[in-house]
Image 1 (cartoon, rainbow, N blue to C red):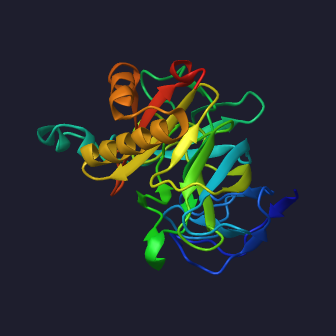
Image 2 (image 1 turned 180 degrees about the horizontal axis):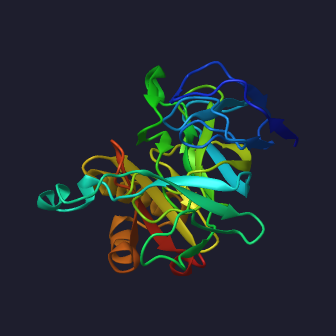
Length: 302
């Protein structure tokens, strides 16, 4: 199994069946540097336009429609000393009568300490003078070519992945995407230094990273993305309204508990009814993201 250092010569604002920028073997590792969500590189030079320019696509030998692409997030190293966010929560996350009272949302710069692995606002904000956050890197937007040959904006998400902004998509996590095109055609970008649930200001702390992933093909059919951390398994649904995203994620979890853990719908319902956790990935973009998560504690011995 080889390791490839992938330096893109072009970036994409859609995820789709585009000509591959790199061919790799099943199980190979890729190291690549991303742009931020606005298209700026680690030197602050704009290399592409937003939203969320993607590296790729990467063609994985042996991946066929109906397979799953296993993506192991092995590492994320920040490559810049600044990031940015918006300054005010989005209008769709507050009561309608409160929207008119929100101040203008401006671009705000954050300082990133790559030695201390922390970040703080560059300009002081009253009440947050000592507000320092530990870095918690995550990938905001990644996935594989969707079915039917569509090219779908990196502003949104679907069964193929995309702009999910779920904070558990981080180093140490493995995620599986349903393959709908030969080679899977994997895209990656839009990395965040920190982000709360929902991406409710419209950004995480957007910056640049060196990202290391291992890409493998599994002969297993799934419908929506599945993931695993050291502690949990989770499934992801992307849709609007939010309840539809929750439905997609729950149905995929029921399928997973049946196929891999031997639980029929009654047993799985008893389990989920008492131990499931639902996480909000994104409530800013055209499609919202919900994750259905179960602790591995409840699945031991299965």
